[in-house]
Image 1 (spheres, rainbow, N blue to C red):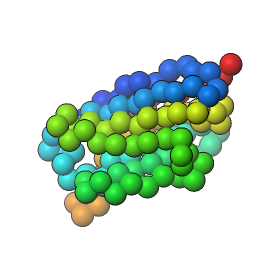
Image 2 (cartoon, rainbow, N blue to C red):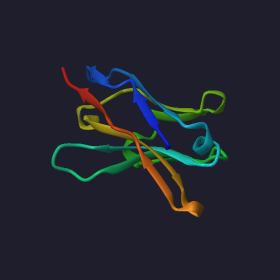
Image 3 (cartoon, rainbow, N blue to C red):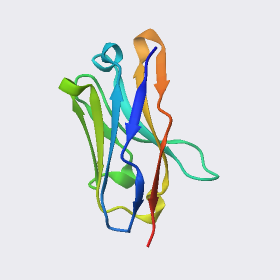
Length: 117
């Protein structure tokens, strides 16, 4: 059973920072593209950032220059460092692990990020 365990959400003021972490089962982490998605109330889930097993990064335009995604392969963990947070970043953030070649796709339980003064 693949598990994705998320941590690090919370309430922060505009301009502040948070780091989200997602620990994955060892068997999936080494081969998966890891990513973070978010879903705001009344909106569809959207891609925030992904990193392949080889380290190739991709970000949605609205977070470029503010968010940084990186892998800690020794701990089977991926981190999303979020700086200069804006109210429009408020959403539930979900960790994702995908192995397209094996048709595998897993989700974490979600963690709330609220940016408000």
